[in-house]
Length: 397
Image (cartoon, rainbow, N blue to C red; front, side, top):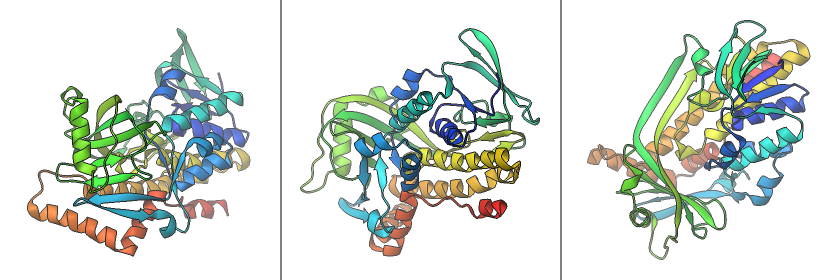
């Protein structure tokens, strides 16, 4: 088989990249090791930045999001039992975020790609990359019991943290921080608890009150990342959630828990994000702790840069933008990492902290919630910093 761009991974990065290339008349083939049912059925969180919402709408895949998603103009920060609203809409001159789960974004993109005749091979195995330093890189894989080879002009590794693509970049630097925090997340059949997300710093640990649909909600509490979910009965979970978020006059609705799991938290950045004709994007290149809600959004910004570079190559023969892909993408990635780290350290209870360090943490929350400048900075980062195209624009002149 031959195509212009071979894409490994049918997550948000791979699917959106294929969609953007299609809109410019560039062929691609997506290889995914899971089934369609699995990628569409794996329930994931989703807070979409203004730029991601605009991208989905501008490229024709935002209709269901606009109908079923929830626009949020702010968030609430809670500490010392008191809640403070952050009016992001006002502080960013009309920007907001959309609560719309990642698996729903995936459903929309899969439907668009297949509806437009796009090629997605699900349930592939034994994926390997070859000849990435030549102008005819290849992807070998198994599908339906047979061995296949896909010859490409470029390979996009959108295959997640554990995929094979990143490992093909020699002399890479992998920057990582492991946090001493885990999130126990639940899906529960309850009414929406609050119109906006609540981020709570509590003596017993962090908690987040979120939402999914009018009938099903997503909430989280900070736990030991090495804890066993079997230790957490439904009653224990609701007791902890209520302890950490309830205030005078406000109670948290509870109900049947239909899913629960514990995830660890890390920050990770790979530099560079390219080698030869291979480019990596999304979780293959970076991981952020979920506190800042940046994972899917960074994937979307990565592929906007990458798709534009590939478009320039095929339309003008110039590879200048492709050569600067890492440089442009990493500027935004590191700023998102900084924000996610800051939100995580400000809101989580580190039980190794001294009383002085705990005092500094509360003082940080006090400053943020009482300073318009600090609230503006938080809001600008939360709704999404702009893509930094300065370098790209210079290359296009």
